[in-house]
Length: 471
Ligand SMILES: Cc1ncc(COP(=O)(O)O)c(C=O)c1O
Image (cartoon, rainbow, N blue to C red; front, side, top):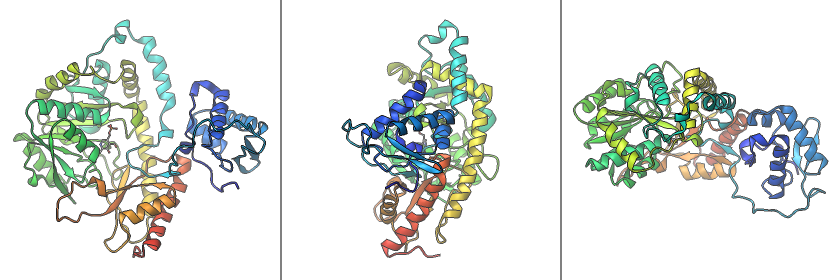
């Protein structure tokens, strides 16, 4: 039986090399069908959606579908989705690999941008330009802190868009924020720092990085104004001021002042500006780093703007840390982002292509945010909606719990992240319950079905838990 909805391009998991053209795409689909990953009855994405998401001509996809229909792999019919028919006269080769663990069809998992919107053309054109115009010396081992062209481009971009006090000498290019945090915590531990405070709640993955570097991790609570700065007792803290992860609150002006004052008096602050580019209601609040650049490390990443797979981020360091971080890099990997990728990203920054991509993404995510907020049932009030691209949906005390919602999400093939694991638990505390809804991940054509899966999930959790969400 054909399903009445189409598989999203993300769910195809195509092992496809963009340079292999029409024949390569047909092969990738054949392999997916033969291995059982696309079982009989699966509706493939429309030619328009697949072409848009793969960045190829629609005619190419149409011809591939026609070829596969001729070979008996799929059935195409005017006005209806193309459906897998393998086994009904198609290649009878036995499956070459066991089917993978079933992944949810829809995802609202925070942390991923819309990967189908990756600016392939801009990246490809920069990739052509860079090697052609670079001197031979560009291919040599780089400065471990990063290539000068990128550090200059970042200094300009960050001071213009985020108000960061950034000269190239204090910028380090790293493999995403996680790598930057690992470098920093290693350097700080080597300098004798014993403990690092994190916001409570915060991303446990980052706390684990600090623990792995030998630091004791503590938690400082977050309220409606953000980090409770006056509760800090440790010598250093990691903060997400623009859009606290995961609660979504923006650090209130009086708390920013308090944090900057504490930094000027010796506190070391690591400002994780992971999604500072996405502010919807007004111009983004500038980085706190500018208020105490010799005590605040500014950290950024392309993981939310371009793709987490790039592994590309940056630190803007207080001067006293530049030498320490350089030492960690020199005794370790000598930097992990390849020279050419650094130069390509510098070209994207300098040509304005990155800025255009950010503006397009901001507009799209704002619409998506509105849609998600409108789709929530009465009785659920999201937090952190003024910036993106995630909101926190707290669950009422007398309604379904996180486990109820996650079970309902599984029944509706939806990937969601509960708030629970973000807490640094303390005995006797009953932390807020909720789910973190990241609305950037779906591709455009998968977004509406994903919103419907979310609506069904809350209705389902409400009904089956016996603890309905009341308006
Ligand atoms: C709070 C927070 N900071 C930073 C990042 C980016 O991490 P990375 O650059 O290592 O991908 C993420 C990604 O999920 C995040 O949730």
